[in-house]
Image (tube, rainbow, N blue to C red; front, top):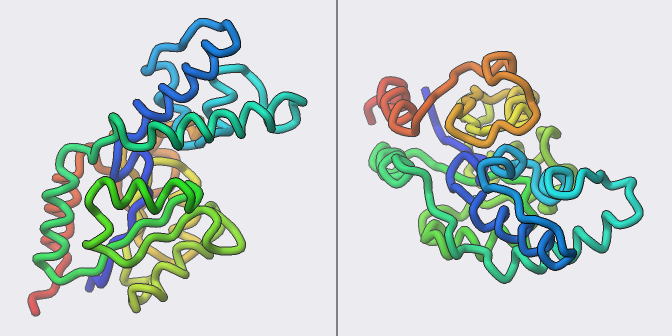
Length: 222
């Protein structure tokens, strides 16, 4: 039996790379540096500001310029939060199918609430789910299972009857730790997590329509 499906946001539900990459390139140009191609930046976007500053400037959080650059990057991103961001092809139909089957669904992301809530609203998803868990909603972010367990409480569903879908190894680690069935999406950003087939996910999909078919086979008729 399946009760609910939870999704990561960046690289799973929505293609946020164009706006995140644009913010990184504006910051590069402000410092007199050459912009990076979006396809170079794309794999780093599921790691947020940490990944994009690593890709753009080759620095990590220990670098003395990391914090001021991170704050400037976040301000730049906030100004272009949903200019080019779109739901991935097949996601609207997948959400329609979940609702047709009367299954709960929600979002569990490491993105900060400052960005998550307005982005979800602009994507037209706010009226459809009351379950949006951001990276700063609970005491720990993924790969901790706490955000997923909190989402299950919000949806009043059992973790073992819930699927968690994501595009990063930490999504699979968090989902398994929470007791969920885990789904890795190969169409996402994937980051520096290594080959997707090494993550230990229960299922790997190449397109959201595949998940729609898998869910239809798992749903017990009401």
